[in-house]
Image (cartoon, rainbow, N blue to C red; front, side, top):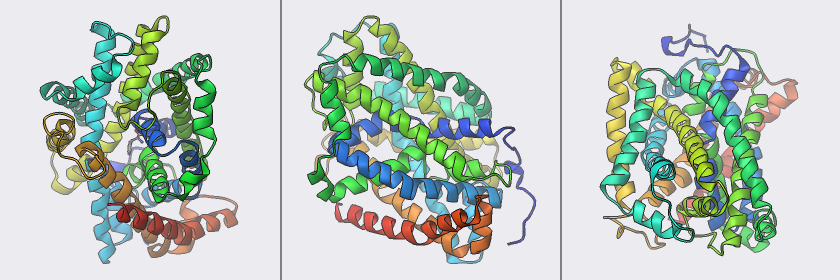
Length: 451
Ligand code: PHE
């Protein structure tokens, strides 16, 4: 394919590999590592899930991350335009829509959970303390509200839109440079504290000793694969767009592996803090999306200086959520600016409003609309999450791997990854052509069967 000059929206280059890594890691590390990882592990039997997760990370996550980076870099465009360009003239160009729909749907309910985080930050900073033992009730009471959770959700989305409208994401990234290591340090300190708990060895066993019987359940595979997509930010256009900022020639497997490693480390640290506390306090690991919001405050309520630790933790998590939200919002905004020639501010605020409205049912699903549930008892937020993560993301991943693997000239695609030696690049292409579609088709089938 003839190379045309870079699209105007893509001509900012990362000045250093470090800046790119930090931005991509800032996007990857978010609520997915603390909130989603812990509750999905808890619901899916612990160690068995983790084993499948790690396999899916290496076999699907890393190759697809390389593929998305390579596509963005070779096409020099944000995701929708990049996909359309590779698929130019064929009906495959329509799959670009999925890379717009998926991040929008995710952002709508992600912002609800981000609102919970902000509310906890405010409570720990200014509110009267909640007594130890009362945090499960406090969480249920908070999420059941109508206006208050919606207001926190709006604040988080508004902050994201303001950042995207004013292009201050670079500033947030610089903030990240300080705050991400701090989050790592804080998790480490919390881990040392967790190691003193009675339930530590049970927590470890839950997380690292697979219950082999659980491996017979298809839902474990669906959940693990979905979590890989969610946590790495795959099939949402985000990583294609990041790739479009990368300098040519550098090998893409190194940053992909480093991001997968760092992201997993953050999730494991959160798990190692949460599960020992779950067993020490006699809580249910399979209690669902509230898990982290009940367990961590219970821990903070019991340790000396816990209130301050709580403030620090929720502050860092708020920033982690914001960087993830900004990278999600950038996808539809970049597309809208380019397609409709509107200003960045108009696009940002219009999308913010639309996504807020889309997120309203997810929030009300815990209160006024809590009777809307499926047969398995899942509420609106969980159903939106399942639709996005168990279906839309693997479907888009499947289509993307077919497009990148087969519509792209093999030699060009392999070269676009910058991977040396050659055989390793061809191995990557083989994985994208054969292994990814096969695995994704099987897991997608299992996901559909579960509907
Ligand atoms: N990976 C982020 C998290 O774990 C969520 C996210 C997905 C961010 C897709 C950007 C793009 O919270």
